[in-house]
Amino acid sequence: MKILVIGSGGREHALIWKLKQSPLVTDIFCAPGNAGIAQLSACISLKSSDPSAIIKFVKEKHIDLTVIGPEQPLVSGLTDVLEENGQKVFGPSKAAAQLEGSKVFSKNFMQRNKIPTARFRSFQRDEFDAAQAYLSEIQIPCVVKADGLAAGKGVLICHSYRDAVGALEEVMVKNSFGAAGDLTVVEEFLEGEEASVFALTDGENIAILASAQDHKRILDGDLGKNTGGMGAYAPAPVVSADLMFRIKRDIVVPTLEGMKREGVPYRGCLYVGLMITAQGPKVLEYNCRFGDPETQVVVPLIDGDLAEIFLSIAERRLQPSQVKIHPASAVCVVMVSQGYPDAYQTGKKIAGLDTLRANEGIIVFHASTKEEGGAIVSAGGRVLGVTAIGYRNELDRTIQSAYRAVEQISFDGAYYRSDIGKKALKRLSTHEL
Ligand code: AMP
Ligand code: GLY
Image 1: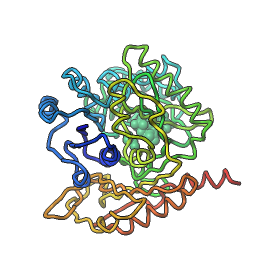
Image 2: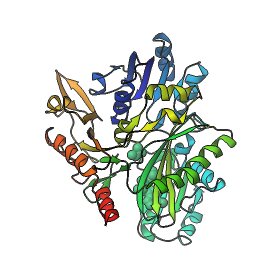
Image 3: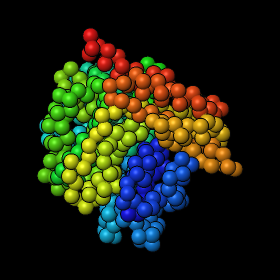
């Protein structure tokens, strides 16, 4: 089987790492990829925003399956264009990807389908006064969200009424998020611990992967600015077996059944971002793809042939028994460039990668790297996702081994959080008491 993967980050590196283990796979191409991905597959400089170039490539190379990693091409309809050209694709259609592409669509969908989520209202650009009036109806803190894709920046948590009015001005008046702010959601703030759940589905059949927890803030203790993700671990003890049962019954199944009933069957990976509140799990957001950096910890725990799983989803014949989960734990520590998520420098030479290559239980996924004169150098804010795999009931040791590996890697200005997984350890130790 020949596979084309679209994307260039740690998520795509992790997917390719797993796809490559399939005996069915003969060739993997990645567009555009990075220096780590280049060690496993042929990287090609196709743009995901150029569907005709992708179709030409897929036909010329006789690609059997295209796997689309990031949200933008999914929301823009790359799946539809490829399928119209007779190609097999892992990733939802444009209509189904609206679950991520439009927060108003997803909130209204959840309301219609009685899926637990924060109370909300949505407003058009010319409804500023109504939006401001709604602030007095809900409690502060509250959350203001631009409707469309905004590279993770369109969510504004407001801790005072003044903050909230300022956030409405940003989205609705100052137009800080462009067309993504043509509609605005205002919703109640949910208290609790966050977790991510991924469901693989062909529209009918569902396989749920290990739960995971991302670490979005730049500093230890979940402080400082929001980032693309500073680390993750799986499984997340906050999602007990009982809670996972409820999440599947009350959220995942009604979501997929609702999409099917409404004529937009969802196929691919459904990412459910959850807040585990005192009233139970509630949906913060849906994403129409795998999470980053959660993929780096969730995919290594899949006991199954990922190429066959993705192909059977593309061919609408998934059997949930194809997807088993290893009784293991995984921890990913993301190493970033100094200054990230603000301005940072790139082109820093990375040392220590070769020493780790032979290290059993450690995988270094590249988020943003490139090859320059025979060396691997940083090429973005998030640079590497150093991932350790260990026994399920020894998360503390898995965390330690991830950090031991991190200490062997160096580049000028490298920064990482030192508390990835700590929340899970705290929860595990309280359970044991
Ligand atoms: P979203 O892109 O909608 O997931 O929002 C990004 C992040 O903002 C989430 O991962 C949460 O940390 C936070 N967030 C979003 N909505 C809420 C909410 N209603 N209550 C509390 N935190 C939220
Ligand atoms: N880990 C957050 C995301 O992938 O959107």
